[in-house]
Length: 313
Ligand SMILES: *Cc1c(COP(=O)(O)O)cnc(C)c1O
Image 1 (cartoon, rainbow, N blue to C red):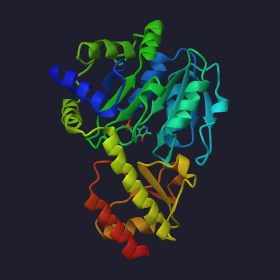
Image 2 (image 1 turned 135 degrees about the vertical axis):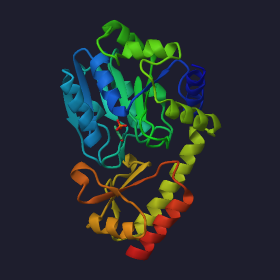
Image 3 (image 1 turned 180 degrees about the vertical axis):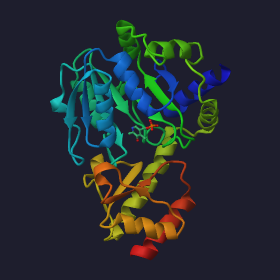
């Protein structure tokens, strides 16, 4: 219980989460999709997406028996705020779409937050950006992530962050039918307890890393600097180009590069003891993905850049 209390305190400090928000530890980001559907949605949620993770979220919500309003948009477009469905209880977005390396910048989220009707809530999947870039938590009611991406920790835990309005909504709905019903998780966490035996190793590592963290602004500076370096490197190559051409909505933490023959690129990388990330879903055959996560070391990036220059320049 002491560990839990301290971990929540340091995570709040390092990520700049508003004091009145709650932090809950669950099993994964995927579980968060289900918790929102089963415990926090009465009838309908609207899903804005342009990639595989956002679409999966919509799929699981429907599977949980809720109505959804699907809103796909292009990977180079801004969030289509004017298409907001005023009937939806939740407006669901994937802040950083890991499958294609696009993102929703904070000022677009702010526009949505300004445009929504009273009583509508915003839920954000920030799995591959939380703890990597600054997120303005006050702009949404639920944020979630799992720890194996920008947190740089072993997989097997999800973090759900929620506003007082989310808690109020949960109490109004009062869904209690599942081991992971939102209110059951919340009531345990408010006593620094958990609804099942948690991933104590991950909680401990999160405690240690957030305690010594210099804060999200410091981390973001490093991530953005590395992203800028990558931008000038990609510019030098004819073999590679960004999948997302509109830089405003291009991810800073998941770099998705278009190339003609990703299979060959990955093979050559493997010969040099480098494992490059596959493209995902519909971009599997024409992209590779490179993580720009804080835990990656400078010398690892140097090695990769050296290999790319040697092989493709
Ligand atoms: C990785 C990822 C998930 C799934 O995370 P799990 O830990 O496997 O549940 C969900 N959404 C996004 C955007 C992701 O990048």
